[in-house]
Length: 159
Image 1 (tube, rainbow, N blue to C red):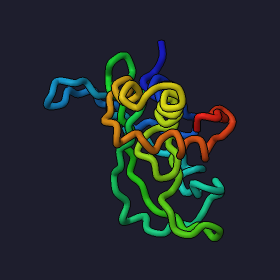
Image 2: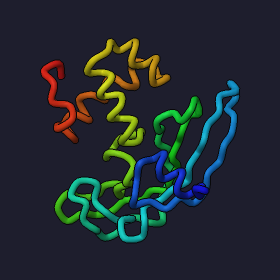
Image 3: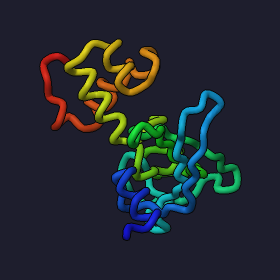
């Protein structure tokens, strides 16, 4: 039998995370959501999102809760919630500490960004947005951002 912790890590496709809680709920429209409360492991909680090196904390006490949208799981919308804080990287400056499931500055998980980028490289925007259950304007930047972050899987002339 698989534990909830292991199942949530598999849904998010991450290794360096601790799953603190998992809540399933219906929103006002009756759509099911699974909200996974997670955090980076202690050894990675203060990593720079660009160089991935541990950095000094800038403002741990002013941390706020952020939510990232993940890939739907069997028709259930997946969200990841984490309390974030900023770090002071000697090389890059002050940024929000890295979370292992998302690219820097993204409100979506890495797998979500990669899937939308793949769809956007082959399908019209209207088809892509309906497949991932989003409005067009929200996803229009995905394929370029993901292409710049991880060019190997998306080296297509269309981009």
